[in-house]
Image (cartoon, rainbow, N blue to C red; front, side):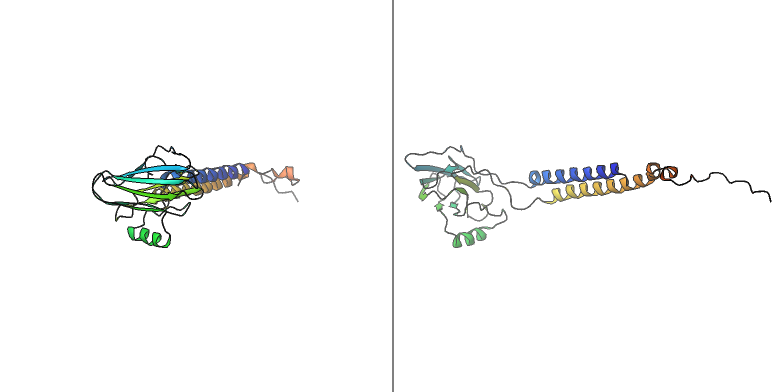
Length: 227
């Protein structure tokens, strides 16, 4: 295959890989984190975390970042009439798979004592309180462990850093694989076509025999010599 076709095929392969890598995160889906102003309140090493819960199965918080070592005062307010929990994981950098059930969450917290585990009654206007010491630098997930409330009721709080947002742990999903497969097929077709076209044009690119030191082949038959 001529070098020009090899380069073109290689370029197509690189473009396909770039497109596939770019599509995976964009199509993988995400879980929205709780709405928050992101502003940390601090008075002499004390942070105030106000959380509200409601029937729409979401958390709303006034801040999403605290400072390691600060004393954090938590107030959870019930705006609806469905019981909830506000349960904060003690493990930095860990997020629960969105497929986890309430049983999975309970099993995890049985083995890893939560930083906060507040039970909120179903009474509208009810409040619950908790205090904890902000953990080392990292991002920590909080969830509701009531059956069917996760993954909708989940969010992140950063300790000494911005928490970012939650993303699904379910993988890229079928659309990404379909698109990636289509790109791979197109690349293979391009490689095959490049090889076929290059082979057909190969004779035109070859060096003429006389330039290689060989006699030029005769194109017409010579008449037989007389005896």
